[in-house]
Length: 395
Image (cartoon, rainbow, N blue to C red; front, side, top):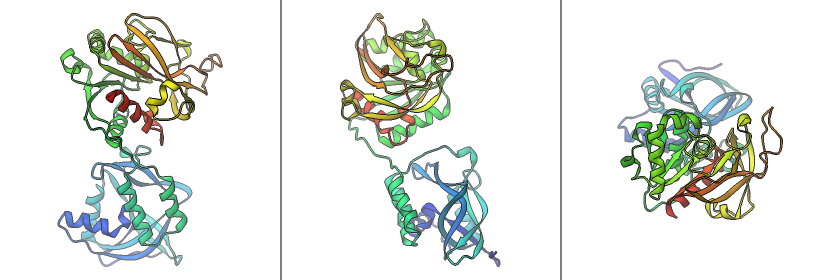
């Protein structure tokens, strides 16, 4: 096993740190001079690449490494002095964001080198923060420059989604509920969705901010996933009535999973702005799975896809609904139906098939959309929720 001495340290660089042009731009921007020499290409065994770290600097997902038996990560070994090592520590946010760890890598000549590398702090890991096209190209360019294995480069080129933008010229204002019943990771997911797709500006409103004067300036209000009853408790009677008045004046409301429960007429303490109740409410916790939904003719203009298209979407205990008549609601339209189902151990098979997965109705002058599954959490299909919101905002 080989390691450096005499004030020299070896670093195993993967991801954007393989791209020397990108590294030099970073150091130049920060008015520092790094001393870097390339040792060669190497492989880190029993680790895998993951897109599990969000970078505020890059404003997108960046690469991380995680332990994974029988997997491997390719990169390059560089030699740096102690001063340059400190520059890398600062660049990677060591030890708060990325942590510097010691690993052994194997070179193309089958030499074993003891090196340092960086992996995300466990507190900052969340699955699937996808990169921008610019960041991914930076990684791929570095891999090509150092002649990493062709199959390895091909995996990056073909298997990594990138953020795509929906142009929104008018810059609408959207508010999302935060408070009792909603966790921070849910809000973070929505923030990234709006940022990645440039849908509109997104404000987080806490329970006490759902005043009549405050919410009337928004083009859309979102009640996200979490706990439907707890969301209604958080809003309180005044907040719920303010939302109803907002709809009476032509506002638009989107309820997702728990939010879709909250907009329903299932309970007196729900909002009751959508003419649906819950099938087998007692056994509504069906579990989590990737389920197929079918897009209807009415839904095709919202999804920007052909009628009868089948999409696989994450489902996690969302409401299974049926239509009822309630005051101030009309024109219920089904935008998508479930083609697959989950059944509670005490539930009845078949209750979920062909029921509304996504629906829309008028409430007085306003529009309400209920979405049972989690499109916003579904990799490769999250752009559909961006399309739905864009349609709502521009209709």
